[in-house]
Amino acid sequence: MSVPTEVIMSQHYDVAAVRQNFPAAEHVVYLDSGFQTPLSRPVKEAYERFLQEGFETAGPKQVWLNRLEETRAKVASLLGAKPHEIAFTKNTSESMNIAANALPLRAGDKVLMIEGDHPNNAYAFLNLQRKGVEIVFIPMTEVVNAESFRPYIDDRTRAISMSHVTFHAGHRFDVESVGGLCAQRDLYFVVDVMQGIGVVPIDAKAMKATFIGSGTHKGLLVPQGLGLLYWDATRIELEPAYLAAASLASPPADFIARADNMALPATAGRFELGNFNLPAVQGLGAALDFIDQVGIENIQNHCFDLGDDLIARLDGLGVGLVGPREREHRAPHIYVIALPAAEWLDYFTRTGIRVSPERDGIRVSFGMFNTTADIDRLVEAIRARNAPAMPQARTAVLSKLG
Ligand SMILES: Cc1ncc(COP(=O)(O)O)c(C=O)c1O
Image 1: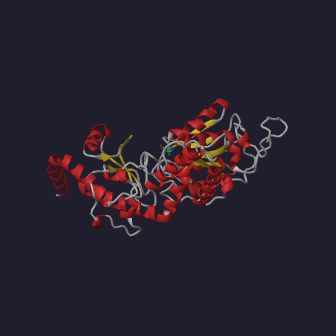
Image 2 (image 1 turned 90 degrees about the vertical axis):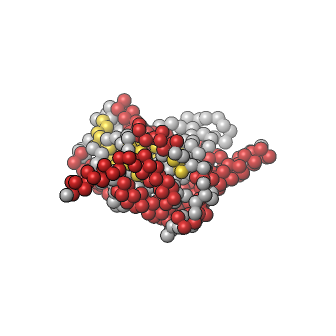
Image 3 (image 1 turned 30 degrees about the vertical axis):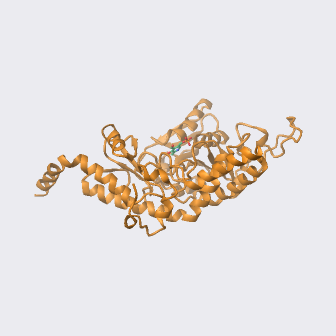
């Protein structure tokens, strides 16, 4: 399927050129970047370079580790942080578990979370119940900000953990106001940014986060198996639950472990364990360069424009949207259509449209390569299946108005 140029204009960047880097988007209408972004050329080339270097030179580990440090600096720049505040992990779940277990929580302490938040964030904290920590869920409402949490804070509350963007309805919660509240009330603040990173600009300092956790296989364009952890390096009291030589300030040069030299570095390296997922880190370095060339604000604005178009056209069809409609409260790239997944998912798959089933409908999620032509195909598919019902629906509306 080729996309005519007139429908791929964006006010923000040359989407046609960007799209050429995602060949999978030509074989299927790919509206599922909230699940996994298709492999792009720059990331594929970074993996190929790694394989070739390993194949021809038996693994130049120091070269790869130098590149890892360059990538760490790029991640830091994306998050408005310092390189020494970034650790590489396996995925979001591992980052959230590292964070949850580093907090100095004791029996009777409380952590506040949002009901229905992503399970990979929630279980990391629910597991602390084994230590006697109480997890209190506040209701999931369309807008979540400091005022949503304030009534639940008491003298036993120690931390708040939440997602920035929800995977199941595309809320974009006001993490900066919640971070401000945490700073005021001396609470630790842990944020899961997996669903927004790479599309929504993130400023760790403006969020006043203690920890930020993420994976890299959605907006950061890397295949599964690499995660990130931001740690506010002023929180030097936070220590890892697990330890390896890599976590130490001075790993023993003779490789003999000694109990008398286990000081931790003042860097997020204290949370790293063992060898790294080096090919994925190289892929991430290439992805971050690519994202930087396009511009994160541009990606966000392009996705917002696609979202405005999608909402207007769903309105035209009389099909509902689950989750927030206003740009202020919604994620740029995640939209859940109120069509029962059990009835619609197979139909979309048969029609060559890739979307995800969610608890309240069908999730459409955009990447930097999507165009209005993709929305045309989706809307046309909905219209085609609803067609026999449409005249009746219109009559019902008219008679109501009359
Ligand atoms: C908010 C959120 N957190 C975490 C994850 C995934 O967790 P992990 O990276 O551990 O697979 C997802 C989606 O896959 C998500 O939407």
